[in-house]
Amino acid sequence: MVPGLRPPAETSEGDGMSELSTMILDRIRDVPDYPKPGVMFKDITPLLGDPVAMAAVVDGLAGLYEVDKIVGIEARGFILAAPVAYRAAAGFVPVRKKGKLPAATLEESYDLEYGSATIEVHRDAFTPGDRVLIVDDVLATGGTAQAAVELVRRAGGEVVGIAVLMELAFLEGRERLDGIPVHSLVIV
Image 1: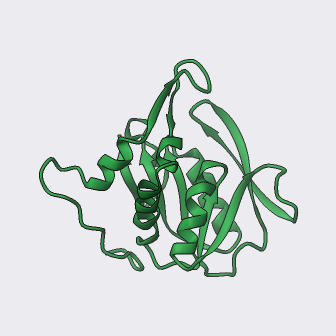
Image 2: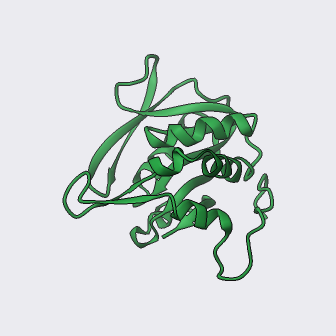
């Protein structure tokens, strides 16, 4: 058991898929060729519009770790991380695209499945030793998550895990996250 990790929520028996996984998959829409040809975009807006599903996702992510701060990665990560932070009685820290934060920042550049980007966090976002959970909607190639881990560490936080709504296993993003526990509500 990883220190600070709470026991996993119970899952239904039978086909090996939990009720939560089924609920999530039934509410994610595939959008082909977005944002560019060849990419199958996973649209979570139908899930976000369902209050029962949204509450189940927030509860599923909030119950994983005892933490001081929850990081949300721009933009869809904000939608999940803020209510997770509230539910977990933790602070919320936004990790934003370059140039969007008003105070002194740290930045990290990375490659993703269809380009490159730079993200930032405020230099004073964490107290040294803060236990931090990084929350995002999708784990794809792992570039964004890896960059967020580096930012948290450079700002003085201790990453205890990464929690995502969905993991695209075929992109092997988990492999880039050297020894950091990753919890995915759904793996496709």
